[in-house]
Length: 330
Image (tube, rainbow, N blue to C red):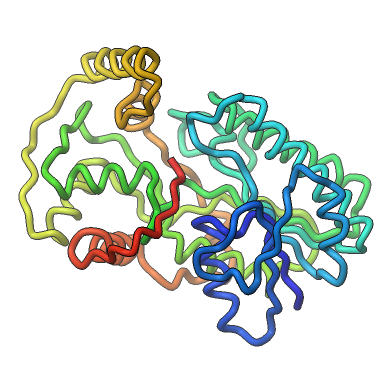
């Protein structure tokens, strides 16, 4: 099976290539504007925003895995979210059609639901709160309309919750880093629930779809269960790291005031800071997502959520690998 990743040089794509290359049934190509830290032998330069490049690179492909996206909070100009995430989807579909490729796995996001929703499932309505989420909604709408006119295609959409794992530099890493280094201050009561997903499980689910879900149009939330509250997450880090975290709690309103102050400081200094009002809001929000549809399949995650956290903590903090290779996803 010839698998083409578009945007596979990043965090998820690197782990997916690492998994697939161990299986002789898969031939891999990665199209990206960035070289791959570990798998340049599979990587060809190509920009999802350039339809001409895609048209010439998908010949002989059986399945496309679309990972290319603008996802960080600080992307400027904001039009880049839509140029990459929405127009990139259109370009990919048109290039696939020209090359006779009819299978697509698309990485969307639970950002399509917005925040502070009550355990939304795949059938819940869209309510994104930022440009990233809005662009993912638009990309899914493009894909849904396309399938209506191309009913013989196989399209699988994965909406992962926040992903974490070794070498990732995103929101979960920032949180784990603060806890592990004793610089953590709990904003709110700590009872808000956080759905998370270990990258090793998310890419294993992609492999499951490649092998088993070959017809129709399907959407899956990807979450590793059970969900943790913030208090439970802190307790888990304490056990793995063998440390004791002070149990101070900072009121939410004061936390938001501090976040807005850092927003103003970032604006004045033109610097990206570790604290912002958006991050405080995300930290205190309940982000719990229903994954019953995924759980109803025969997929078995290779790692428990607890094991994924332990592996990440050991790699990053207990036995750190200092080779400078990290993936920025915040």
